[in-house]
Length: 350
Length: 135
Image 1 (cartoon, rainbow over the protein chains, first blue to last red):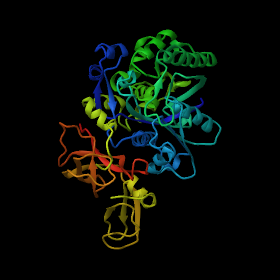
Image 2: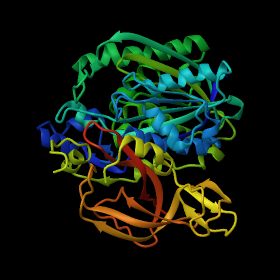
Image 3: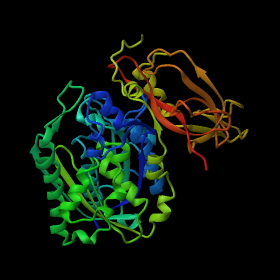
Image 4: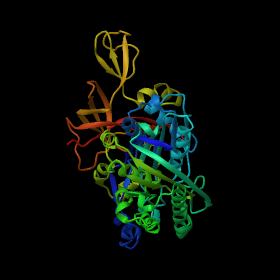
């Protein structure tokens, strides 16, 4: 075993804007949301950002892990919607959680996979004896150019994991691997308020190539077969791509659906696949094996094989569940979404 | 209220965390990290962090916006009694148009933005409260 997930937490804002309303407002075919596999997306309030959502998820993760801030040796904050262009988010969250000062602490950026990379770095630190426990946070208030296709899915949410000794963990990471290339499928230049994307270039050469390559590397290196996994969760830019990846790997749909959260909350970027993992951990049984593959544009993927342990039920009970956060929802119109997310140009102080 | 980076930095622990001061002399508790008990003046105090749960004792709707706040009115501001027995005033967020906050509503502490000095200034974070569903 490489390391373990000692605890996890999630945060999903309760406000939702309907994909059908977005289609109607911007003149798309009203059947488009169904084609994308998305019903609605979660919207953070105006006083929320990646820091505040990440703090909540991390607080629950510490509680589930049964550790305090004094026990955390490193904090990694994966986001592509940092409140500050320059000034770490990780330090704000760490101080707000009472994490000790003798620690590593940094923000990671790799589009939607920075938190996945944070878990891989944590595995190295824990396995190498440089850290007892690390805190990895994936949190985004994803931006989309209003009316762009991304507007249907770009949403808000966070997830956090305490990575530590596998023998103290309710889920052990038995293997992991990363696969990275230079692929310009999605980007945001300095001072640009919204990201750009390479249209259909985001599919085959980016999302599918990297996820499938990372998954196949993991299978090759471990000798595991797709049928050895009880659950599979992939990065979820929409509700359809993860099912297509599963089909390509020969994994039946019923093993993917439990971790598929994007149809109900949108794409939470750095939280996306890992929120799916959190939901699966809350439903899995001891002995279950989970395949997780993240994806970040630019582009890269991390694949993990995770085995659920005997203490899972007790650890699940220590915090709020992802499924409850999904079902606790309040609909808002697009106008309120625009207000919450600061899409109106206003004179500050007026 | 306009803060400054240095002023906020000095008080950030009390902004970020619900620290309770417990007096070893008179036995009373007060919110915020204090070196002296506000009730009896004793310095025989210890500090514990609240679990962050409580109930609303009273709530009011504030219709003006304070300087530097990014938020538009109305704001809901309530008196919350924490489960540890101390009372604190805080903004109540995460309330939908058709939802009601009233005496007895269970709430949970959350970290939220309070303000920033200007569009490019320091962002001030602090504790607010959001309603939680009870069984």
